[in-house]
Length: 277
Image 1 (cartoon, helix red, strand yellow):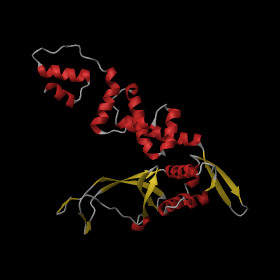
Image 2 (cartoon, one colour):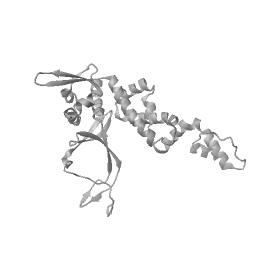
Image 3 (cartoon, helix red, strand yellow):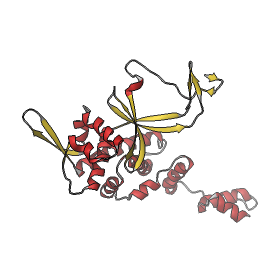
Image 4 (cartoon, one colour):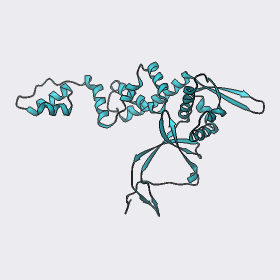
């Protein structure tokens, strides 16, 4: 669809079950970095919001959209958020082993963090999500009950392993489909760990990496690559498996000789140009 403002950048779809006031927006410290979150009341679900394209104004029917940018909303497991907040709390007070769930918002000063935690603890999914990462104790008060929670390292590691495994299955199919099972195993797990690391507290993920994979977080972060760099890294993993040509170039074939020299010595374009000139 073309308009005087150029290609339409954004389309809003609204139904009776998804009214404008169904969405709430937050900016929060999530695993030591600022993230934009959206909470959809109707679905009782959080989403992470990332801008993927910056656009100018655009027409949508009879309306003008002043911000034509495109945003990607990714559904966010509530267990990620619970783990982030509980890890922050643990670092503030290491002696605090167990807390009442209803008191969790009181440990935070930021108003948006308090709001998010309120949404989390009121969710029907709260017990299910907390059980993935915590020990849960129910205190019977006769006319009601209270829930006490404490982080459990074994459960946390199992939760991380579950997410890494899912990420690995996706990247093996999307990024390394043409490789053999053996060839794609190592690059796939490294890329899956790199993707997963963005959703867990750094100290927690570092401990998981050391225990389960004998890796450092820095090594995994260094692997967070895309595009040409990503392909070059995958090629490096396969380098030893590639058949090496023993055919020597003709002495008068300067281009072929240089190309073979670059491949053999793994020279960059920069170093190649320097050697030529």
